[in-house]
Length: 361
View 1 (cartoon, helix red, strand yellow):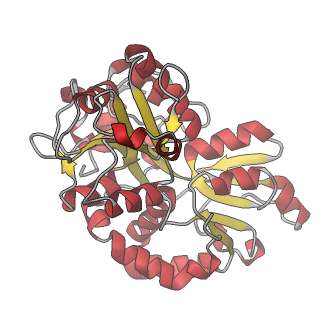
View 2 (spheres, one colour):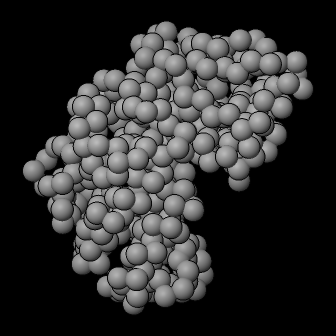
């Protein structure tokens, strides 16, 4: 993907052991008694909503550079991580946030929870991919977007031989009970999809659309990936998820069974971004991590999974995306408004549709 392409599209925006072995989850670290070492300069608590396999892949270089650092990784879906950070506001555990939606980080900024920091190399980051303050409170790394996966075998078993390619197609009564979707209260993917629909259709018509879609939804899942994974496994006919996961899941089972679809009208989207959590004593290693997290090598890694990154690295668009993936994004989404309205949107959504939410695990 070329710098020129990235600049054109993004201009519409406001913008699991130790690292000597494996990375622990925060829960495992607590069980092992590492909470007592929470202030240790060589212990780093990272909260992330990146995919599990991405965390493992991406961290390989960091562990080589910092073999004496213990990284405690807490990985959950975007909504869960955001809620946890807000709950820990007065006694923060995380040192850094890595790969959380910009919408969520804007909420944390509004709550005064982020410490402004300019990572090394931040001047390379496109203006639309970072906080507008002179010293940014958050810095983006890539963008992800709404897509869905279609299990053609499941649909065929219900006498359906067509693949829905638009939001309007999903309202066809023949798909009743065949759709799984991410829950926006717990999933950033679910929230960016809802925000995209509200932006595309406007508030009134957007909620009317979601009312109609709800008639065909079997379940709202508490993960952005789960609808795609379970649809690929044959549990549902259509899984509304995000591009990377839909493409990965379709590839795993084969194109004769599953197909990834990007909606004709455009995709809701958000940026994955990083930030330093405001604490009494911020660690130097936390700042070093944020420096590394936008370095050239890791940016190249991000670009192998997502076609839109925060700098113009990589000349090849990952397989499965359109030749100009930036045209797929719904334009003029106001992320500051989305952050300010997050609570009211989620309350409205829950009042209307929470009856179909999957049980909490």
